[in-house]
Structure formats: C-alpha cells, structure tokens
Length: 85
Image (cartoon, rainbow, N blue to C red):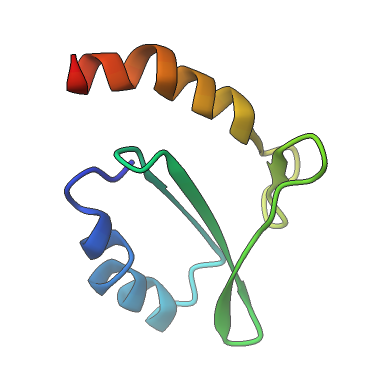
C-alpha cells in the first residue's frame, strides 16, 4: 500500500525488483484509489488487467485473486474516511 511512498514504490523500489526479476509486484496508491499489478514478462514489467468482473488473477501464485471493485468499496467506505475524515 502506497500513500506518500508511491513515487518510491514505482521508482527506486521497482528498479530493485527489476534487477532481481521479482515476478509480480502490486502497488495500491490509495490516495488515487489506483491499483497496479505488474508481472515480469520477457525482461520488463507489464500491468495485468482485470477481467470483465474486475478481478485480477496472479499468474505466479495460483488462487491469488484481487477483486478491484471490492477494494474500491473498502477505500470509499473505510480508508478514505480514516485518512481524510
């Protein structure tokens, strides 16, 4: 989860992950309510896209799914209120 660290998570940290070929990397920028799920493919990171139901499925860890609409609901009802009043 990235708040003030979004530039770090998508900059310096991503360079380290790239160097070590970390297979998947998820960044949730909750101030923007944006989720980026990256997959290492052929020497570069490619953003995985949700299916028609809004679910992103890991290609590395079978059974690991993330329902983006549910995450957005949690953001709108809980996290946003906690951080922004």
